[in-house]
Image 1 (cartoon, one colour):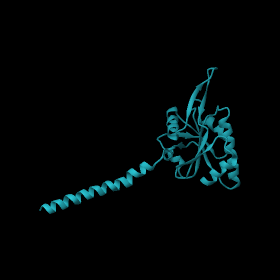
Image 2: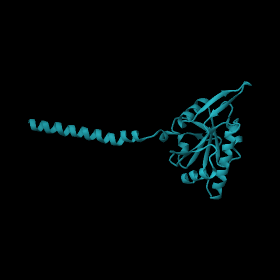
Image 3: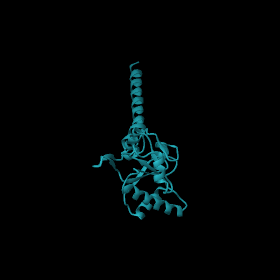
Image 4: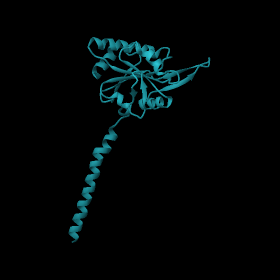
Length: 195
């Protein structure tokens, strides 16, 4: 009887050990191997696009996409970046391709959907994104971008913000960035690899 009990205890202990090992392999190791980049763009934000559709983390799935944060009153970075994007889109159009691109405001106080529509309308493939301030803050946190309101002497304000374009694959996973002012050929290599 004692041998049977010992065998049962050992077998039970081994079963519990095997269960812990399986849980370790299936649940713990993948979480340990995840990087911060794996969660970029993931979150519970819900914004509105100039297409009048919702922009959520699911919007990044289905096709490769680019995301850029900025604002319509931006004096240099945003218009320059949109000009770069227009050049990329022209090159892609020659190849029969297009990169789905989202321009997300960091200034929801001034950037209504209608204003965003007017601001991005000249760049093929670019969709403007805005929404309530609390949802914009959630998106800024989810994408881990920088955005800060800066008061001006005249009583107005401007916005400091991150100045790069983020590239995501068709599964909605972050791949890499295109830096502000990056050379055209370098940017196109990254985009071609993405597509």
